[in-house]
Image 1 (cartoon, helix red, strand yellow):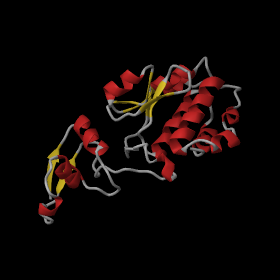
Image 2 (tube, rainbow, N blue to C red; image 1 turned 135 degrees about the vertical axis):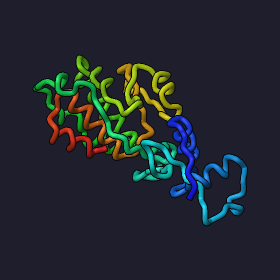
Image 3 (spheres, rainbow, N blue to C red; image 1 turned 180 degrees about the horizontal axis):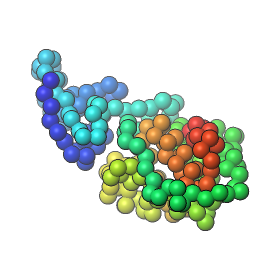
Image 4 (tube, rainbow, N blue to C red; image 1 turned 60 degrees about the horizontal axis):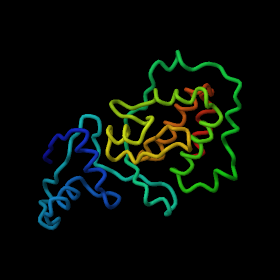
Length: 203
């Protein structure tokens, strides 16, 4: 097994070119470089080593077929928040109000449910919704005030605006990461941890 190291931007680019589940980094690069897969030496496949992402790029999609236009990049890095304890304050908001079962069931896949719940939260907590900007990964933005800001951080972010809130969110994470991000959003807005996890599972 031979290894090469690539930077974050190049790794994301390679991952974004995945065309089928289980496609190896070697196959992706051979296709991009116009080299025949048949000429590969099976004994020494190419492996890409990245400091924070040690696995082969993978497309994770556990949702119905209609969501195939949404590419979800499997990213295992933790979601972090800045000064979380100082910002979260008790609230009398009923966060269950964001879960409208009928409307939620009408959404298209995990991305649709993710966006619907975020939009509902933006309407429920307009005064404090800006707290979502504190949620980010190591060197990676999840929320921003513009599409351009998210794209400047990652060209594969697939940014979408959260309703008409003026806030944008990256949507190319896998479903598990979307749930983690939504749970952190709820915590930032004053929801308790148990309820936050329960609502996030609706994605």
